[in-house]
Image 1: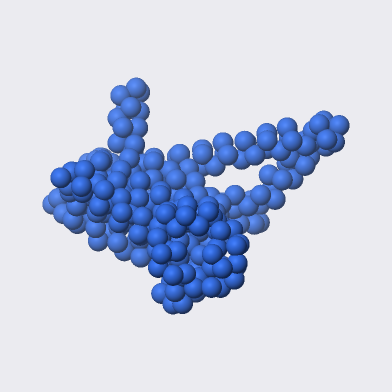
Image 2: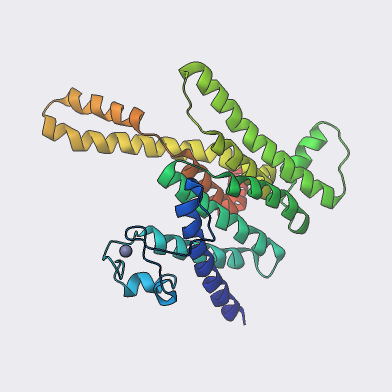
Length: 295
Ligand SMILES: [Zn+2]
């Protein structure tokens, strides 16, 4: 019975991942996700239903369009498979509970936003704003772990509200703290460097993450995402140095071009926020337990 449900959820994940691909291709360009129906991005030919089956069509067509032979991006099966795996992981983590539904919705939105930010540098409001509303609303049916909010309420001597209100409060505080932190970072960076380091889309994304995760897990994302971004930037810098130096024959030349490349590289920070939020869904509780136990 459990296995049957997991398989069903996997198939639902594949189907929704397929719809997510349409959103990723069209939302950043302000196109409708409903019409026209799916077509090849290269030649515009409409897809027949059997060329539009998640995962299988991509394999059977051997990664090429049936009409023009143009390549079909690896992103299509990757998004479908990732969504399906995350849906199954939600069920394995949260069991037959409303939390599973809530976090499936969260994963769906995050996968969409991660790929849209990676491809276009945009985080469409259709996803972030509806995510904020959904996160707040769903805190009623699947409450967040409000330990952190309770802690601060006690510190300030405030009365603890009833359970349902506490969940909504925790969700709202998570949204405010998540968005507030990156809004401040954005403002400071702008004051110092006179250019934008983050987009406002990142701030909206963090409001959505906070609304879904509540304060405790949002704090985790606030600290881990910049760390992940820095590690990635350092890796890029190193990789470019190793690639450039032998060709140029001068040590300094590699260094300069590495730094230039680093500065020119517009890091899609939403990708790191999204990936760390996904990690927080499944590993956040264990990470907190490990951190509190070892300090
Ligand atoms: Zn084509």
